[in-house]
Length: 107
Image 1 (cartoon, rainbow, N blue to C red):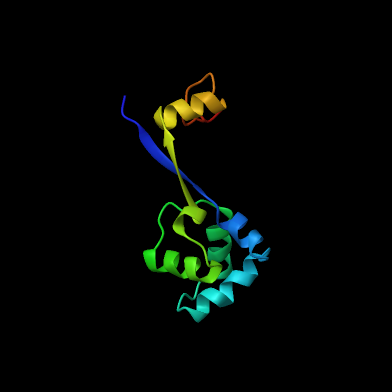
Image 2: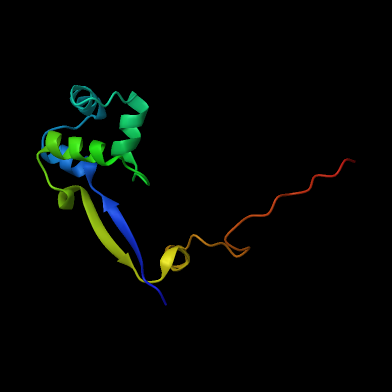
């Protein structure tokens, strides 16, 4: 079985450790470094785990928060892949992992 790798995103925790509790605190600091992101983009960056991240934006975050990549990104080895993680978390239903589309017939 091939091991798959995942990561944990700790931006919110690092911000809190630096006294930044609101996503609005981050937006002007990013703008000073040339990243004009909307408030919703900054919120998603902080609140959700990004699937893609511009490396220059990552460098700006490291500069703003005076931290290292290890502080923001924690690599995690996921031994069984996504399907095993879903089974462990109980996400799979008795009907399978993906719902099927319902057919609605006229009366």
